[in-house]
Image (cartoon, rainbow, N blue to C red; front, side, top):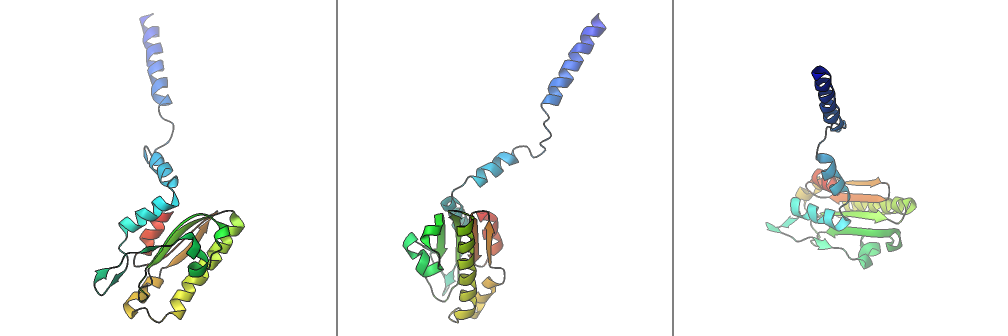
Length: 168
């Protein structure tokens, strides 16, 4: 009888311990990933501004300029009607190409149009403006425009890889 009770208790302990293992080996990281994915575009943009060193001119740091909704068409070529939410920054100094942005489009077609506009913007900045100092041109080497669903991100700066990591 004692053997049966001991066997039942052992089996119960094993069941309880196995029930605690759900096969998720990532531990708490899935909660962190969920929190990262729920950040607003402005929160992600603020993370970028805090973590990435942007424009310097004549040895001084230049503050990035926050683009307003009314500037989307004139500056980036984006129809504001296509945008549900965005945060974009550009360097106000003409000799420095630094800029980045994250856009949530109203739908997939709008996201495609935003991406197309940003592709044109990056190419235009790279090929048309000769005002950039030669030591700034490397920033175009790994600049990017990427679309994922209704989200479009882009960057031209000295650490495009870091911007991409923070905006995704």
